[in-house]
Image (cartoon, rainbow, N blue to C red; front, side):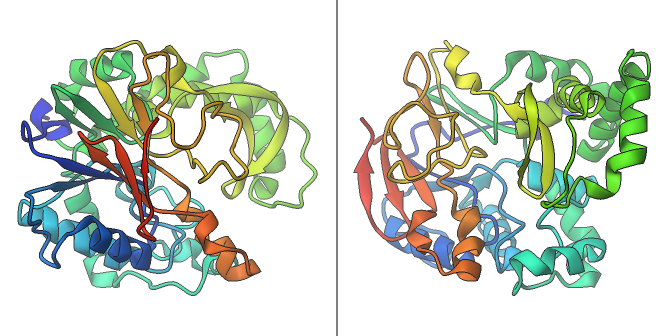
Length: 347
């Protein structure tokens, strides 16, 4: 592979609208783009560029429409995007929670929670995966870096050092997965992990299951996230927890770490993935800062995911959809604009 495919450069000086995880919420996306001032062909009267931080698909009502819009604008040179973990799952054929719009084997199970939604046309599935596999992992510019989940220099170096191992992104991902698996087989916890999976695999996605803490599974999850650098960039880094908890469709034995708290680089980083809430309603434990505050010791890390991917909860349970928003970080202005038109200056 060529480094230029995975690490691409943004045009210097062009103002950006960095858009958080869309998760198939086409109405929210169209509303946000309208408030941002984009025309239907992706052009902008002030020559702004929309940049998507990944996780365009899964869970929401119309992932095909979201992807089609972004692909069209990218083909016309009027948008850029990086891959998120949900796109990586698609191109590596790894069906996960909320992907029943694409993977038939998940359709019935996911429909209980996320339907109604639009399924992707079967004849175009292979072509869609091939097109997404051409997207980068990182977008770079002197004043800002864009990645889906975590800016991790060691992971980036590992990818660069192994580009020769494959001709395609899925091939490179498989190389890292195989390397990870071979390393895991040598670990003293691996036999316990296999036994836990044999015993409890059917319960992992059942929210009402009574699962004990599975130490082998926790170690495997930590190892997988840390040893596959592509996964690290799109899913972040994690640590073990003392008790299992249910989140995003499965029982978890590890939890996310706020990598930005140890980021000291001078260049700003924009990312998604972590489901902030506006205006601080039900903030998760990752964020000590207010919802309108930059993150990290240098206050130059910007999470632009404001949890629009959870709007299915409002549709199913009658909650307030504005508790879950789609946001854009306007750069270099450092302001947030939401899909309802509300604007907020970052503190």
